[in-house]
Length: 414
Image (cartoon, rainbow, N blue to C red; front, side, top):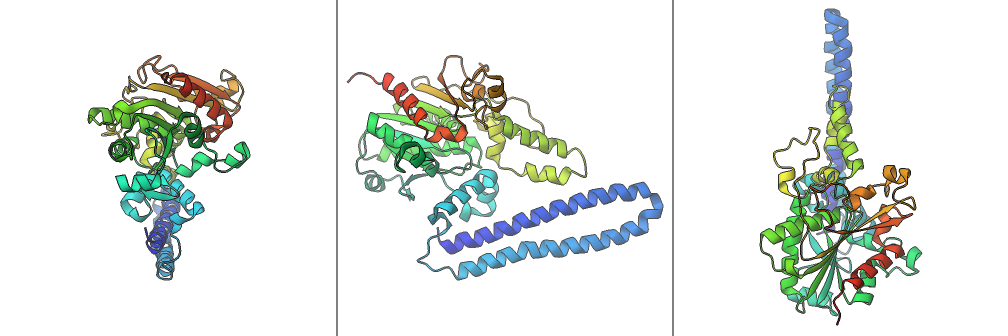
């Protein structure tokens, strides 16, 4: 992706965002004015007409300026962008920003600003790796028959797997992937994807990517470990369902599935945003703000209820207040599953832990406790890590120790 194309797309997106914000103010103003003038009766009609004429003219002018100016700036900067300059995605800060944008508005970005959308791709050395034998051999010269594939969560990128590495481990290069490579001879493979798309869409893309990865891996693949953080765990489970249905060759090779802080039963924080948007839509004065909240990505919608397959969201009104109606989704029966959840308190049964969980996902949701229809009882080994928050699960020493011990215990004898 060229830098000027990204800059121009960013300018268009800023213009759309500002126009949307002004539209919210306009619609809220209009609703309040309508209620006030209605209370004044017929006598207020002349004033209402003058007020409407002036206000609509002002908003039209402001909307035009806010929509055009950022785009013109984007075009101007794009024309001045030199070929030797790295694009937005060539800088760590730019990649993090694009990850957040894709997570919050990924479906809109994919449709209206595809230059900023993140495709499902393998990553190595801050670059995309095509799933071809030549590219994979160059990116993974020491490829092992054992693959550990890492799938990040909402608004994240593959670089989040090294979060706080220097603080936790004394070096920036230590990650959960490097630990599995050292202790269990697994080659770590990281993917990046648009976390704002439906989980089912990303699951389908991941299943196809895994099929290509296994087919073109430099050595025959003997074993796959899938590790997902937060939404990444849902994407992995969705890929397992769709890969199995399609008869993909990678499915039998999966030996371990690891979900770190994954909201198998949904995330109350995301549900709270949905409920707030639904309530705001009940009243004319707050309806524009409700629509603004309702513009969050399909991925955030799915995260609230742990939706995995298309049937969970197809023909469902996104503006309605849904019930917990997601379909049953069994895990891969031939693989070992580990659901690791954290709480900011030391004990998971602490009353405060029930409310706060890991600050994003409740512990019961992370280990799929108490909902046999969503996951069969005993289908996964649940583990609790106390005193950690949601993002600690990406690279904390306690996670390393717990996971390596679990995987080593299930390895067959040599």
